[in-house]
Length: 156
Image (tube, rainbow, N blue to C red; front, side, top):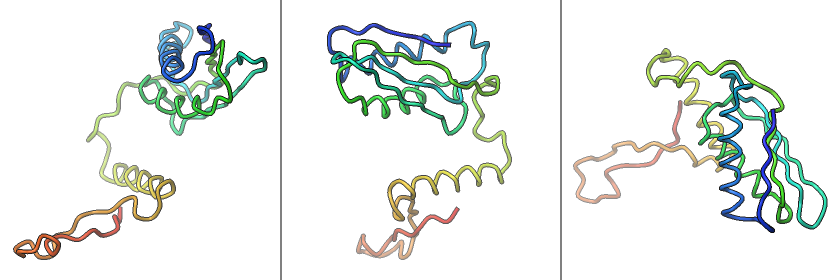
């Protein structure tokens, strides 16, 4: 399953972002997808100066949400070495059928805690140990604002 888009002369920046948005929407609208999520895709381009560029993207979890896909793919598209004349998006691997959006409180407390712990771990891996902090009340009645609360590491 593949979508290709011819770009105007030396497209880059905002034009590439709009082209990516169009490719993702077209790919998700294809009947051949049969409601399945996407697990891995290949983003490719034919460059104006000649040559090609190809980037394999594996999603952390299988996706059918165009906004989340665009967010991940836009980061990879920023690595494009030169202006592109053609942009291509192809499915490499499908995930399970899309069962609809996961409700916030449908799963148990243990699963929510595990997802939160994993999110905190990923945030700390990217931004360092102070990426996830929580605010603790120390002296709520203090006249000095700095003494009322303190930041402490978040323990999931």
